[in-house]
Image (cartoon, rainbow over all chains, first blue to last red; front, side):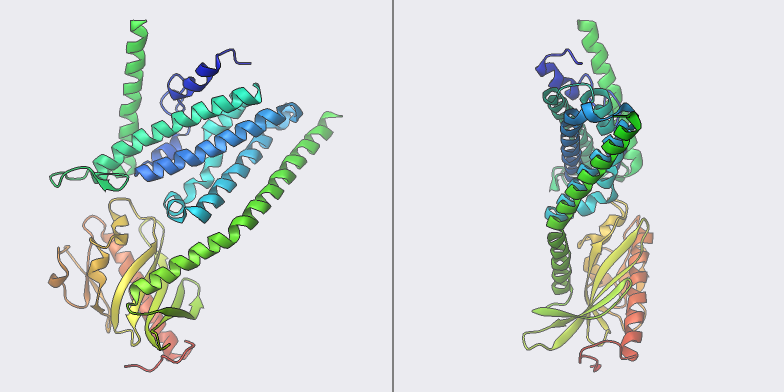
Length: 203
Length: 201
């Protein structure tokens, strides 16, 4: 059982245990779909939806699940919500569904979600699991936004499709390609570590 | 309860519950998803065959559909050919608008593509690519103009522009267009196209 205060339970997902920058989980979608802010945002929201609802379900039925079949049960629960998210996007936001392509169904294998079920929801109350999932989701959405904003601005000179760079700006195509994702993520991770270190030395 | 029984019971009920939940969700969204797809096709047909008010499917096979675009009097004034083929990354699906003799391309639209963002994905962009496909002469084979030019006036009527840095994607689109035109000509020759617009003008 977690002994943190409710506030800490939420904020740990934003920084101390940020899924992308601190735990390095869920890097596949983080690298793959952050080439435009709208894609990053949509992926962040879809992942949050799956994470929040899976955490709610897992924490409420945890008592009935024998530990031998817990992973199988979690995966079925997660896959259910992923399919719901996928159908929902296809029905109501077809352009986003199209641009995310196979990455929506792939949320099933996002380690953040299974990781939170295993590490948190299966041991904590429904309320705490909800707060934890909300915090982790916000941390993930923030990371996706940051990464996709950097990549879209440098790669296309636009933000959410609006031109933000002047005509003098020559887009860095590499930022839209896989290497750009790795470079940006690497620099951001280094920055996160540096900030963490500075913060510790002040304490 | 014995552990093994409990495992079976839990897994079965989790599976059953999520299965029935998904069936409901699938049922609720099915119509809307089909409608989205249909709307998208209709929009593309009207976009590539100018001046039409309705359309009718004339032919369908794997990776190739032909729609007839009708004017207000119900005469077919042009074809919209929906075709798919292999791009640089994945399948490209496009909609090609031609006149009834297939000798002139009105416009091209890309329905689906997963080309490299910023490079090959420009095939769906009007300014970089699709603009250069307007009013092409398709009585023979269309060719690619390399290197890229910056205005449609610099091209021959039978040429289309290349995207700098994405020659393979540009070629892929061209191949799909040339192949599908060939196929449609054959279909018309064999008289498999339903509808009365087979008189060549």
